[in-house]
Image 1 (cartoon, one colour):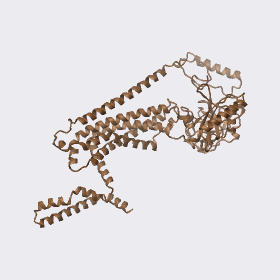
Image 2: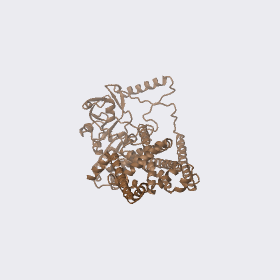
Image 3: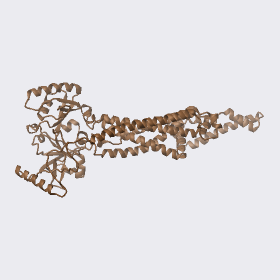
Image 4: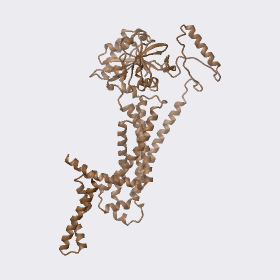
Length: 585
């Protein structure tokens, strides 16, 4: 504590202490000079002898300051001040380096934000490593959902999972109609089992979850609903009074019993590209069982259980249930960690993208290293003077690296601005249905990565110029009247090598980009089997006033008749599912 207090006082009064130190050293030199004068020397010779005997005053001052503050910290402060003065003096070079480093680090931070959200950051659930996705083996490599009775039997008979939960996997965007108050609106509702949220570890932000009684009614007439946080905020302005109110959903009253937290985004994890508005109970009854393989299932492993042991157990259970209930659909359970199911398909693409950005950073480092070498050539005489005045090899190396790291960190500030803009654009991008894309953001992990990338970039592109700085010939540099040293073959060979490496890395990126573009163009040329050009879709549905089948048919016929008579419409048809939507064969 005494040492810390002493160093703090030094920081507060360092100017005064420096003056006192200089005065004290001057006093010692004067006393020595006076002794030499008394021995018969002239004043001029005595002063010179006194200075020689006292030694290097700058070095002595630095040693004295080391007792007040750590030597490395003082030297670092000097290096930083010198680097900032150099940046201000050569503003054009500084701006160019900051721009190049900012573009490279910004691209790296943006891609890392995506990789962090999709691959590195754990799923926003309690103990996500214990969650397992349970599917049914379909035709070929297809994954189907499970039948309700299979889910009930697996949950009752297995020994690997503490619980199994699921949801109705065939909900569609806009399946529910909200009427009765305000503007009518189509909503996306997901029927879920009573224990889904507790299995995932999701607690309501307001209200409560479903009860077992509420999950035993008719599938078409849910008695209660839980709102997503986004829908609650958008439609009801985060009004806590919504709890206990009834909404008219599909012409039937539904009681709002809870609101989910903002951290839980069902669509981002399980249905990329869809915005989920509310959740209703999914009854596990014979009525829903007759619908077939319609249930998506998630399980939580018991302590000590593994995915491999659960796979072996479910393989046996699947065969037993299939033999015991031949009237049901087939059952061949497929188990995989939930994290792998959510983001496993995008992992190869993200790794390719990360490698591409890594190559971009190599190009950036090679480019900036070349610029630093050129700048070092123009500072040959300055470095030689500093060497002649006593600057050691280590000090020159450290000064050059400090300048490079400071430039890189300034570029990182620009890169962070680009990363904030890039991640914001990606998070609101609806063209790609990537899981967890909406959760991409610049968080503490990304900031730490950006700082690390800035320091490493500064070290990498500044290392070669820094190693060259102490190797300059002092006498040759001081004798040379020119500003540079164009005749050094070693430096010319090094700079040529950097240029060649830049071109090589750029060619790798161009070839890879060309192959990806060609593959993308071929995908666009695939024959879909129909012509989507100038084709538009609108969802219609008879209301509750059309109770009989003839009434509903008449309603649909009238809609088709009016649409076909509309100006600009050549034809109209009807379908219960659009092409390439759902998994119907």
